[in-house]
Image 1 (cartoon, rainbow, N blue to C red):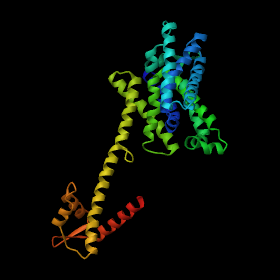
Image 2: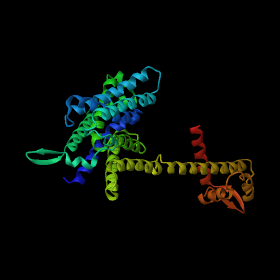
Image 3: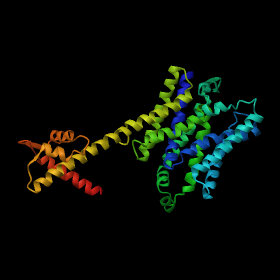
Length: 370
């Protein structure tokens, strides 16, 4: 396994593991919790390191995961006090715990490889050099197998408890009635979020962990509201972000983790613009079409009223004068002619059968919406 392939596979596994749990964080409106956990796990690592004095000790992962759960507990305690909102509580807890970790590192572990920049941006370029050796043979980076195990755990949890996660995420009260414990499901999810964050941030950094958990999820939700499709699409977008970011970083010799985070944002913005259902461009075109349709209905209503009152002869100039308040009355009349909603007879305008059908259909639609 080459250096480049090691980097790419680790980035993909981090994306896959993060995107699964990230969907539920976004659905629960807990996206900022990702930011908090991905920073505060550092304190758990530092505290455990003070006792074991070994950066390769697996207890570091347990300590970091526990600190992630403690972060959630502290935030929820502040929220339950009804003195502050969840976002404000998150903004208080995680800077405090992260600052404590930074202070301890700065004072007690200056000679130890607990680099603050690496915590933020990761060491994706160096994952290849920390290999697992089996019978004297290097079988791949250690973090690759760790992330593979975490991804398998997240995927198994999602598959086995799909129904429970779905009910708890959208209707916790119904879940309680059905005998599903929202508290157990919530903290199980938080444990997985913490575990994913701590196993990913050594490779890609806490900043990218946030991007990988939130970015694919919010991008997927632009295209579908189905939970299963959202998770699968989020995983696919996570792979796209990792591969795209890696290729850009490789071509231009840039820091891979940072580029992946930037690529994640770029993919979201593109989806936000061009998404045919909820994209900004689609929204602008839809509003423009609705404005034209409303103007056409007003024009046809005018002709309909004239025909009912036996004033069948309405000239183009009369229509032009009536709709002079619109931005472009000539364009409106020409559009109605082009679509076959009105016709010209001896320079007089009359509504056609097609126009009558369009007018009645739209009138019923507006009445139903009202």
